[in-house]
Image (cartoon, rainbow, N blue to C red):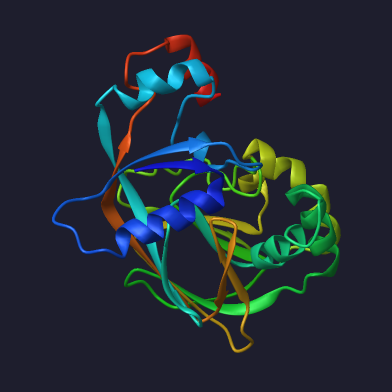
Length: 249
C-alpha cells in the first residue's frame, strides 16, 4: 500500500489498515505530497519523481509505531502527533479557508483560554495542570514544521508527551519561533515526558486532534502500538545519499 498525499491522507490510510485484522503488521509507504507533510520529516520518502521507482523497489522495511486514541467520538489510530487543547482550534480554523497553520495558530493564540486538566502518564500519579495544549507525539513535527517533540522517534515504542502549561497569550505568540526551532523547552511552562499510555480528563471538554484531523473531545486515552506497521525505509536504502541528507534536514 502506498499513501500519496499529506498527513490527512496518511491518517486515513493508517486507520484503514489497522482496523482490519491481519496476521502481521501491514506494509505501507508514505509518498508525502500535501501542504504540511509533517510526517515526512520523521518518516522519509523521496521528493524527486525520478527517485520513486528506486524507493518502491528497495525492499528495505522498518517497524513504525502508531498511536491508538479513544475520545468522545470513539476510537481511531494516528501515526504522527495528536494533542488535546489549542491544536484542535488551530485545525478547525485552518480548515475554514485558504490560510495556513501559522495564521490559524496566531488567531487561536489570541482567543484560546487555557484549561484545567488531569493528566496521567502510564501508572504514574494524576497531575493537575492548567494547560494550553498537551501533545502526544510519535513523530517530532506538527502544524507545518513546528518541532513540538524534538526527541521523538516513531519506532522506539514510546510517546513523547509535551505539556505546554498556563502560558499567556502574549508569551504564546512571542514564543512561536521557538516551536519551529524546537527550543520551547527553555520555557518554564513546558514539560516533557515519555509514556506508553496517556490519559487526559477535564471538567470542561476540550478538543482533540490527531494528524491534523479533528478527533472529538476529552476524556481522551492515548496508547502506543509498537511496530504496528512496516514502512519502506528511504534513508537506509543506500540510494542517493545526497537526497537522503536533504530529506533529513
